[in-house]
Image 1 (cartoon, rainbow, N blue to C red):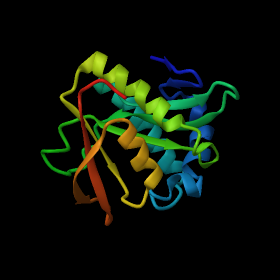
Image 2: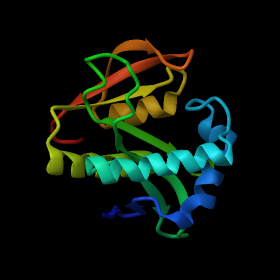
Image 3: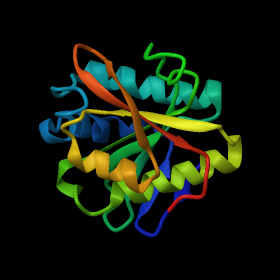
Length: 174
């Protein structure tokens, strides 16, 4: 499964993506508001396997983001079921997630990629709603979520940190 946008290619992870994923998850600025610290190579490997498993078991999941112009891995975006235990208003719904390499922040890639996968998800599965969590201090991700039509509906404690819970009801994307 591949989704193409004007500037990006979105596709499932492959074995040969491991080094690119390690580069991404070891970027302190890219992961600061998501994991608080860079991931180990082992953690990145387990994460890749989890993403491949989503596609095998659920028919949807996270996708690798490649920049068309350079062919390099610049991020990950998609929808998943992370079983976070955040409540009946959150857990039963596909969770949107995105992470981009710090050197491409501000180019609109997150919005472009997320919009494309949301279009695909709605056309393929027609979920009632999608959800996401964002660190309240992550202004850029909050702006991306707003552009995609996500709205805050509460807060939760996740991994010893307060996060905003956001939801988006199925509707045409802006």
